Length: 201
Image 1 (cartoon, helix red, strand yellow):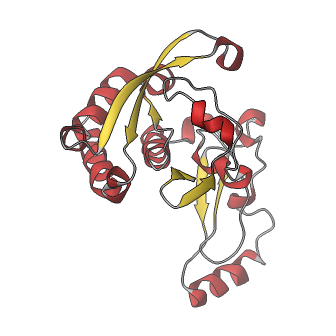
Image 2 (spheres, rainbow, N blue to C red; image 1 turned 180 degrees about the horizontal axis):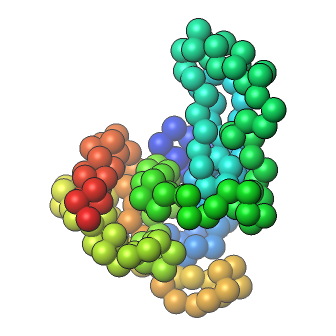
């Protein structure tokens, strides 16, 4: 069979995955794409080129134009720029060339919510509480936004045990996850409701 590990991604299941428990962050060996896994992890960085491609560098996403004529114009403009802002070095926040205060916490959070809820692994609410300013209030807003999805059985919240060897700490992690397949089908509605609640803060 196949694992539906992201809204638009499937992977062949390995025999060892049959015994994998959903309440642990420990992953069984998988056929998941190693290339696209990076897109769904908070703080990940990558360069992308081409029509409509999006890079993530120094906490900022940089999208290329999607229309061919706009893209050609954009490429021509880039040829006259010595150091385009989208080409900042991945370590730019660390070395000080981009001020970490310039990274918008709200945009960062909405990006994490959208990308993590696209995955079967879901959104780690405890991570938000501890890594996002005013995290506890934001988790409450996320849960209010997901309430209809939770009530309709399109989403679930559960605790997963953290493996001390992998995460550096023991305990539980509260996960909000859309349920495959119906939760994925209605993901835009659920995520939009979450965004509305976050905007109210």
